[in-house]
Image (cartoon, rainbow, N blue to C red; front, side, top):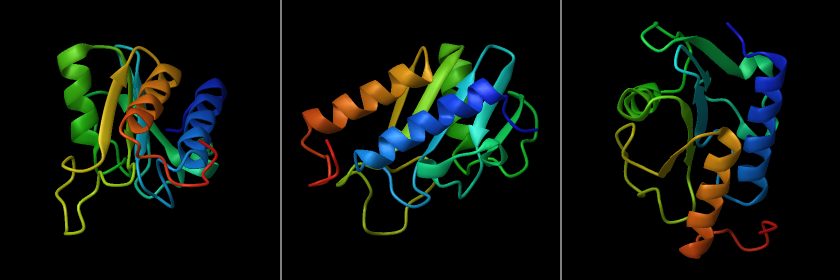
Length: 138
């Protein structure tokens, strides 16, 4: 299942913002939203700077979401604990250890009421810690 057009636009905007500010690169990070019934999450390996409908997986929270981000369990955990909202997983410089990491134990996770707000909080957190990449527009 792919995301709906307005969802795709929200994901595209969020991903481009994170990328342009140096908070993700390549296929780092992932995004999701949950309305209380349906979760939409980026696919494993989705490039956040150029998301399209085919980069999203949707279904019920308990569904097997084939192709979803490897951090699906982390996103589900936020929604089970907090309810509807959005989760942004970014990788500001210094937030990912050099050694191999276990899914969910790297980067920065932010939960908020909306995807736009979660991105805003992730950007603020990175700026407060001085973690934006030099020359990345932020």
